[in-house]
Length: 500
Image (cartoon, rainbow, N blue to C red):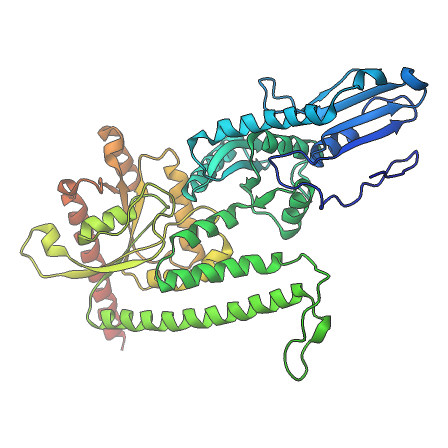
């Protein structure tokens, strides 16, 4: 291929028919002339990285024959100095007399060695995590650690985590052109073709970054949706996850296609002028409408069950809390169930409801009280709006609760942030008025004096959901909470009667 330009530059054509995918170079080298004797420019090196060229070569026009000067640059595999490329010094054209195909094959082999070294821990997909924000460093580090846990929970291995705090954030790509090319070379050196952003990207940003790097790009919301899709097992859960995914993807169906559809519809059909993009969007909207109707039906059934419980006067308890706080472990312990428990974020997605005999737990003969207890999906900071909308039926279950058992992983250094995130979500969902019972879990992982001080500070009780013998204080406090709620309800009913 020969492309002719002028003194202002050249236009590089579409290279999509050449090699794509991160593991290899493009299979193209760019040789061009520098008319003023200037060295390789920043633009040259940017093209070298973003286009993954085999080599970038500049010929200098003032020389004649063998005296012509030349300068070249090529990308580098992983190295201790973390250099992205090697730029040769100015030399004569004769020195560039090499077996190029053999040379470039050895360079690709070096890239492959670094990738194989990273693959020794198994064939799992690898990703580079990236956070671009002007928030405080500590906030970004905590958020990145959570993103790492989410990524591992989804079955993807983290090759590297990068935090950028630029002076100016690019509206199109978040990070500047220079950082983008460094990121691309890091991905080549590591054999990674997936970038996960800690921030939520607009459809335009996602398309722009993907176009410039030819990498797969997802954001925090998409990662959470992927985890939810893996963990949904019940009809409710699968329906809610699919709805959330479609609502997320609909505004991102923005890639136009020249392919025209077949004739669609009957009288008044849109005909051959409707593009594939428009068909995809219409089908997505139709599917969303169908799923919303399905969820309404499921919601009505749950409403009937809740009404029966209310008539029977059975108190409803719901275990809520940040993801991986130990909610399912506590639920299994209280109800003698065997639901799946893993040390992962969002290990439990489907809600479960069981009856709980309080007297069996309290080992007393006072009364034969029963309660219904529900294990719910975990909360997380900045819970995506699409998820909140799709999981409305689950949150409706919380709305009918008499008491919310707010479980907190007391051993987490981010426990205060987790508690604030849960309180913020409860406020957004309109659940702030429901009585709450604060319980610190995993007390066995901290010094007992520190745990007692935290309980006094927050008015909580502490437990270890792995140790049933230590639950007496929990049940006593739970019984008192329920007694207070009943007393308050009776007083309200009495006041209403007097008023009438």
